[in-house]
Image (cartoon, rainbow, N blue to C red):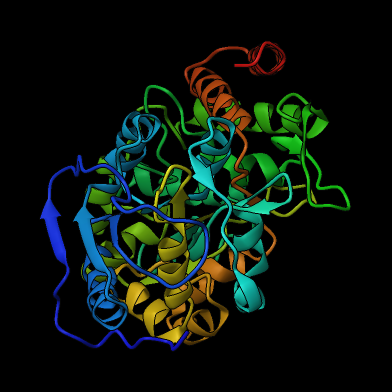
Length: 413
């Protein structure tokens, strides 16, 4: 299929709100040329470039393509509610960690990347791979990184301990309320805290094996490294370097005011960092004093997924084929600047120092596995981390979290 340029006028329908249209209105015999109609769901940032591609591709192939704009935070739940009833989109743009649950529930179908597979970041493809089959066309990767206010903290910290020392000193001088800018909240946030866990030698699940699989029966929350983390984490809480009351909104406001020395966040806040006018450096989170294990983040991916019940699957696959090109991936990056999963686009994007830092820190990161069990770990580990910051015994709390995770996984959730 000819690759389609995206520099055309917006012509496909972009509806504001939730689309309740049943997926794929035309029958599909599983082969042949593209025909009929497609419904695509996408977030507010990327609906525009997707619509541009859909307009030109639809005109050339005689296909009516409707692109419905849905808030990304609502998309998963909306799809999970509508797809079992044969409603919802033929194609939607979502996060890789949804795919395990959707596969288990029979809601998405495998996608053929064809000869384009090698043009993607392998980790992004793996992020959409469940039981050896690929369930997404990756468009972006994402992981957290550290933004350092170079006026408040001129030097790259040698360790997390050094960050805490500098941040607490700044707090004592009245220059910040947040010595280390890491969001926690009332349920904890094991995703944002993962670099701290990994730097101590802790992990979520053991692996990967030779086939890239992780062992959900090998939980590393209360491993030797996990307990090293728990004790070190407790010290951060005792000193006030990180508190459970730290929220994303508070940290964003403090950064904008020039009153946050370190902000550990992701590419979704890239624009806010740049627009703040703060003199900053983007760099990896350091490790712990006396521990040689490096800190790594959790690396996730976003991409297009295909409705298992689409009645126009051949046409949907043909449209997905048309997304696999540099011009379109560049357009998606321009609309939502997360590191592209398409390697040629990622190379170009890495000229941006923030994207380069995100890619560097995420190069050896832990995948945001498309396993339903990941949600259990996020929930239990996050809550335990919150309790530890609030003063609960770090070892007992961590061991209890591990036991809860193992029990829930063993009982199916």
